[in-house]
Amino acid sequence: MGYRVWTVPNAISFLRLALVPVFAWLIVIHADVAAVVVLALAGVTDWLDGALARRLQQYSDLGRILDPAADRAFIAVTAISLALRDVLPWWLLAVLVTREIVVGIALLVLRSRGEPLPQVLFIGKAATLGLMYALPLLLLASLGGWYGRAAWIVGWAFAIWGIALYWIAAGAYVRPILDPPADGAPALTPGGTP
Image 1 (cartoon, rainbow, N blue to C red):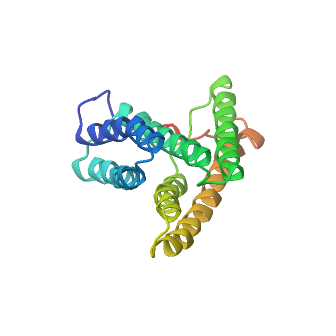
Image 2 (cartoon, rainbow, N blue to C red):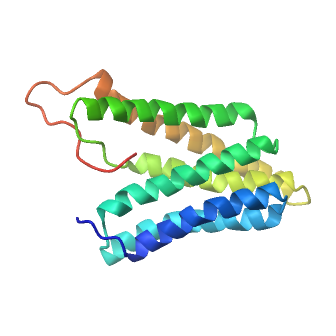
C-alpha cells in the first residue's frame, strides 16, 4: 500500500464527503426530495468506492482513512439534521453518538499503548450500509404519501439492524483494551480506522 491520492475510489470518497454540506443545506431549506436523492447517491458511492478499490486494486493509505471518515461525516450530519427536523428520535442520535465516543476512546487507548489500530471490520461496513439505507428511507417516510408507511417500516428495519451491527463492531474494537494480548502474543492487525 502507499500514499496514493488520485485513485478512482478516493475520488468517489471525496465526492461523498463533498455531498455532506449539500445534504445539510437541502435539509435546512426543506428540499426533502432532493435530500433523499443525495442520501441515496451517498449510499451508492459508499458501496462503489470499495467495490472499485478491490476490482482495480487501487488501495491507498489515504483511502483507508478517507472512506470511513466520509461515512462517519455523512451519518453524523444526517442523523443530527434529521433529529433537528424531528424525523429521527433523539435517543437514536444519542445511541449513534455514544458509539462514536466509545470507539474514539478505544482508539486513543490503543494509540497510547503503542498498539496498531484495528482493520475496518466487515460487520462495521455492514452497519454503515444499514444506516445509509435507513436514513434516506426514514426521511422519505416523513414526506408521507402512499410510500411513506412502507419506507417507515423498511427504514426502521435497516436502522435497527445497522445500530445493532454498529455496536457489535464497537465491541470488537473495545475488546483488545479489556482483554489485551498476552506478552509475546500478536496484537491487532494493523489497519485503518473502524
